[in-house]
Image (tube, rainbow, N blue to C red):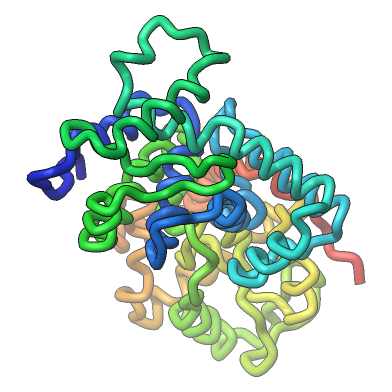
Amino acid sequence: MNALPNSDNLRIEKLTAIFGNTTNSYKYIWFLAILESLNKEIISMNHLAIKMIAKVWFPINAYHLSFGKQDSFVIHIKALIAQNHILTDYKSQALEKWLGENLEDKNVHKIIKELLQYVPFRFLTPFFAEKLTGIVDAEKNKLIVEYANLDFLNHENYPIYKFSTDKKHIILHPLWHKYLQKHQVILTDFCKWNLLRYLQKNNPNVPNIADKLEPETQRDLKNGKTFWKNILTQKTDFQCIYSNKNLSQEKISIDHFLPWSFVGHDLLWNLLPTIPNVNSAKSDKLPNIKSYLAPFLNMQYEAFQLNFGLGKTKLLEDYSLLFSKELTEIQQLSQTDFCNILKDNILPMHQIAKNMGFTPDWTYKP
C-alpha cells in the first residue's frame, strides 16, 4: 500500500512522504477529512476539525483505542462528554451537526483550537522540507503559510493547498483537487491502511483493530444462537451464570463474556446465553472474574461436548482455531484441561481490556 497513482504535474512523492515517520495520528485524520470534503476547493478549517473529532469519536468511546502518547483526542473528547452530556453513541452526522452548532462551547472551542494549531500547517512539511531545515519550531507555521502561497503557482512544487488570508480556510490547488477526486477511493484506502498500521503499533495487544475504525457493524449471532439452542433442547436445567435463573430456547440473549467492543468478533468460545435483562445490564462491562470465570468455563466445556455429540462439528471450528487442535483432540480433553486452555486465553485479554478502560468487576444485581 505504499504506491500512489502517478501524475505528470504533481509531486506525488511529497504526498507519500507525509505518511512517513509518524509520531501522532493527526495527519491521517486530517487527510481523511479533506478526502470527504472534495465537493469544493475552499474548505473551512473548522469544518475539517469537526470531521476529525467525529472520526475518532467511536474508536475512542466504543473501543477505547489509543491514538498515541502525543495525541490528546481522548482528553478533549472525555471533557466534551462530561461537560455537555453528549451521548457516546452519536452518529457521525449528528455529532458533526452538534459540534457545528456549538463552536462557542468552551470544550468544543478548545479541542478545535488545538487541532488547528499545528495540523493544517505541518501536514505540508514534506513540500518544503529543505527550506524548513534548521528553522526553530515556533517559526515553522508562519513560513509554511508563506511557502504554500508562493508555490501555489510553482509548477515544480505545487502544494496540496494554500491558506486563506485569515487562515480560516484551506484552498486546494486545482490540479491536486482533480487528483484527489479522481483517486479518492485509492487515497482513502491508502490513508486508512497507514492509520491502521499506526494504531496497531500503539495498541499492540488489541484484537481486530481494523473493525474498530468505523461505527459498529451488524453483529452476526446466528451461529451463537444455534449453538446454545442446541444445548437447551438437551438440557432443561441450564442456568444463566449471572442470575442463576433457568434458561429457555424462547427467552435467551447471547452475551459476549469479553465485550464485543473489545474483541470485535462473535466467536463461540466467548459467547454464553443469558436472560435478556441481564445482558442489557452487563452491556460492554467486564464481568467479575472471581464470580463468573469458572462457571463460564464449565458452561463452555459442557456446551462444546454436547454440540460435538450432536455432530455439529462444522459449528465448532472457532474452538479448533483457538485451541490449535483438531476438534477430536479438543473433545478428548479433560474438563480441567479444556477449561485451563480457555482460561489462559481469556485472562490476558481481560487484563488488556481492563487496562484500556473497560469497566471492570461487573456483577449482576437484580
